[in-house]
Amino acid sequence: MNLTPIFSGGSGRSGTTIIINLLDKHESFKASLPREIRFLTDRLGLLDLNYVRPYPFELSIRHILTRSALMTLRVTKSGKRGLFLSRMQDYWWSTEGKNGKPRGLVQSIAKNELERILEEFNKSPKSELEKASSQLFFDIANSQISKPGIRYFGDSTPANITNSQYIKQLLPTSKFINMTRDGRDVAFSISKQPWGPNNPVECLEFWKKRLLSGVSALEKIDRDSWIEIRIEELVEQKRDETYTRLSNFLDLPESIKMRDFFNSTVNVENMHSGTWQFALPSPHQFNARYSEILKELSDEGINFIKYY
Image 1 (cartoon, helix red, strand yellow):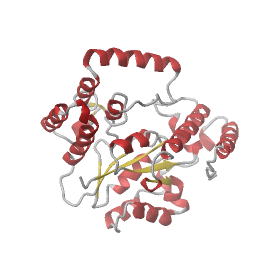
Image 2 (cartoon, one colour):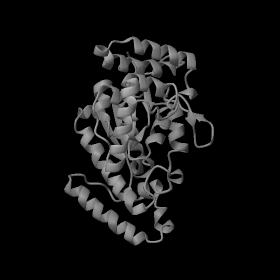
Image 3 (tube, one colour):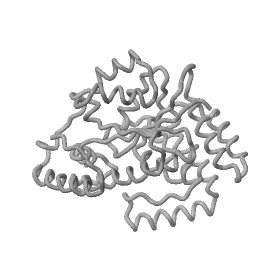
Image 4 (tube, one colour):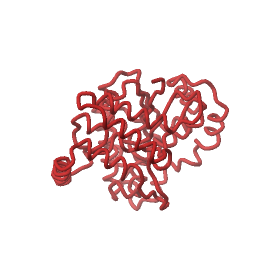
């Protein structure tokens, strides 16, 4: 298999999607549709089918117990593989997106092609489950590629980084882009989303934990397999230097389409940095907690840049 999987990730709202959209403009790169394919890192997905993963920090003890009970019940009824196949043809195949339109693998693969791939996967014996799971990923990736010369297939699920050691075990040639961003911008943006805490200060704690769990996961894989990109540096602080570092990481020759997208779209105007300063009722309290978190991260060996 000559296709190399590229996984961007980190804390949500840190540029995980824009970096894949940028790379997608290169002639050697194909971004997944949807951008977050879900069936790999979601609960009951390919990683859970092959490995035992801890529950993420985002879940309370109550949620963990409830989910564990439900998962045990569902697995008992249909088996882990049967449950995975069911979700592949249901939730991961098509769900309602933000704009009301279908979102999922329905965006990129015909249903009969998906059924063919799943049928082949289901023929594999339990002893070859890991190999079959890897093959399934590449079959779905290749089904989205319609032109020659594609070397990379990219996905932007934020949880990719915290699961990098498991992804690397299943897909050994994988490379990772750890996207980071000023925690205040991340926290303020997360507070506006339906999937995170509503309180911006609580979102700072969320950002800190996601950052630490990502660092912990990346320490378990070889250093040549990942790169950290700070979105502020890509957009403004070290713009050309960071763009070149990203291109060199993937050995991408210069591309006019990718460069044009970088110049027109990956810019300060589209980043909305520092909005929290005038949008929050207590920005000083928020900033004070952020400064404390930077000190706590420094004590953990993570020196995170404060941009404002």
